[in-house]
Length: 421
Image (cartoon, rainbow, N blue to C red; front, side, top):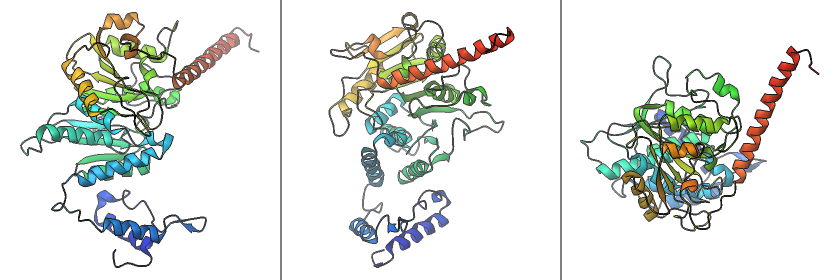
């Protein structure tokens, strides 16, 4: 490349496509971009800029004998974070903040032989952090059975990021492209869902899925109830739960409303009723309330929900209010390493800490109408209990959906009585 002085975009495109032809695992990954592409008659990336980039990269020796093995992986994560900072709302489609991913990996604490799955893996960050946590514990001891990783992603560009992220880390990961809700990629020979020891995920919050997604599901995933069309949060949870082995556990990042919406309503509420099913079956192990302004697609705090088929303490749940444990950053707040350590130790040691965590019983949660929001049970000075705008919008959409259903049933009754208008 150093000798190339003209047609750099074309030359670079030919080079990466040749690499993908010789390495099938790179097909659809490194050969996606045409470095010679134009828009409105102008080059998108000029040869001069490509030349500057290759000159900078050419100054450094990046072979395994020259730098530590993880240098490319850390550089790739840095670039993803910088890309997320400049992408605004769309960043949530591919990037979970590093410290949130690290915290989840400590909570899940993967063990040898385990298979780890992310059904909406984005750029693969949650899988990577589980791998790094495992490596930290066992220091690449060759006698320790490695983890196996599986992920599915609906966006082609993000799928390519995940594939490259795994390759750079030298991780054997099976990443599939496709719509997990409609066509899950990992199935058994009989067509049933494949089961995994650990599930980790950060799905897009409050997605709009049609009721047909749940009503016509061939995989028997939604036995606890159908979520409202306005929010698929508990649809994702049920898919992940259906993908767990008999003693598996999962940690998922969601909007705070997923653990509180509908509680206190008179009568039926779909999300509250699904939550009730999970609580009554003693599957919820912990809920961790995150600080505000951590995530790139929203300023809302978000929560980590931990569901465990093999709970350590029956009929109890650990609720952690970590909303005050962040540090100010630009453009986003962040969790310092000390806060990550504090939160993970509270969870792993099942501790109550004044003003941060409480252990609650199933009966207490039932008395609060299955509201699992940590701020309900662990309050902090100056905490604002105003309903977030995102939750208010979801509740409004759900009410409109219920009104349409009620109108439809009323019309059917009137028709049968011969009173239809």
